[in-house]
Image (cartoon, rainbow, N blue to C red; front, top):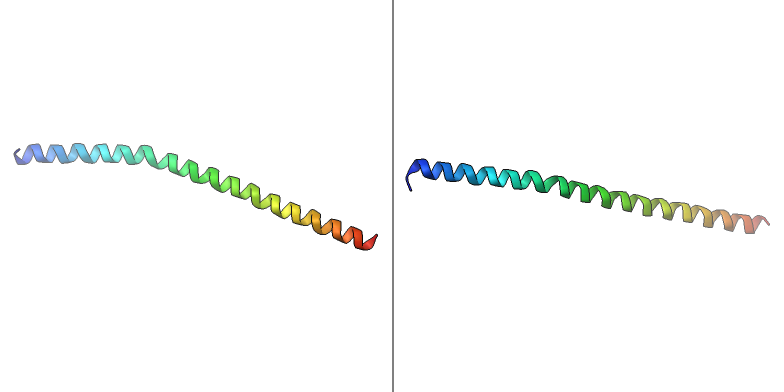
Length: 63
């Protein structure tokens, strides 16, 4: 393998690596966004649940 073949081989491998990274990263970002969205929904559920519990306690005390 001479120097020119070696350079072409390296450039092909770099192009393949770039394509693999380019195709992989958006999928990872989407998965992270979905996880954050799910956690956000759970946090809001806990906040609403606690608020309703507190309101129920206050209502019982005032009744």
